Length: 109
Image (cartoon, rainbow, N blue to C red; front, side, top):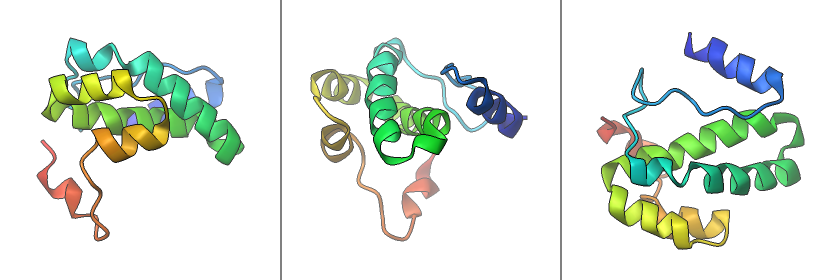
């Protein structure tokens, strides 16, 4: 079902937020949700420059990645994203570091 939703979003040409609080996506607080438009704007610009054939999917995936981290520490992450001026800054300052072996996913809710 989730793949069908992603497929429909990707094919529609419109950005719609993924359903939060269902499946593997934890519920998103108001502080985090308030940052969604900024995240989508930054990730859309980055995807249009780097992966123009996959813009919608990249926007959805990357935005949800940040929101998932935000769920863990809403005050810190949402404030960090609010003050950030680029994707690079968000990913380096606001998010948990990504492990080369992918073990960061082992502690997901």
